[in-house]
Length: 186
Image (cartoon, rainbow, N blue to C red; front, side, top):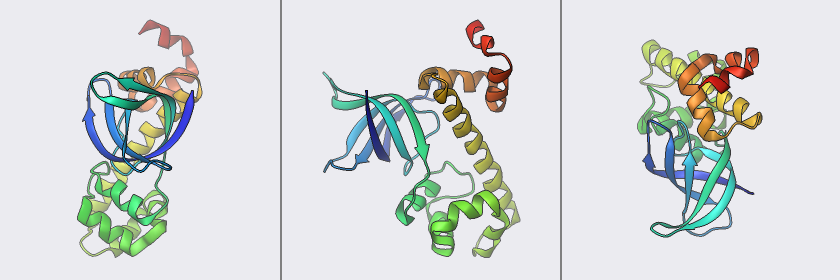
């Protein structure tokens, strides 16, 4: 199995039922975008992923990296942060608002949203209602990522981890820790 680090440039296809996705990505060392396929629950444009899997050639679609496991890292540069926030994943932030927020907070943007979201009021055009929406959405996305990382860290495939999350939601980690055998009943 190989490991690659990629940035999502476009999501060509994403099945909302099972999370199967076709991603167009940039990978260091490759001039052109590369296709990555697999179960990617709630990823967005601008996300930086570490993906384990294998290269394969699909008769219809050509060369692609078939993912078996993945983890997401937050982008570490200004452009990546803007893309990530402007992707629609965080409710209350679109592309224009992402630019304003990142212009104001720079590389500290994620830290501000995570630890002191009220500081978003410093950005022109953001009111208390929007701050609440952003805070709630950020927490929900963090929960999903934490659950996926936890399950994949215990040898659960991305596909099965997505099913577990769909079944148990925010309580997935607690349910599995308290009774790992609950997974066998599904």
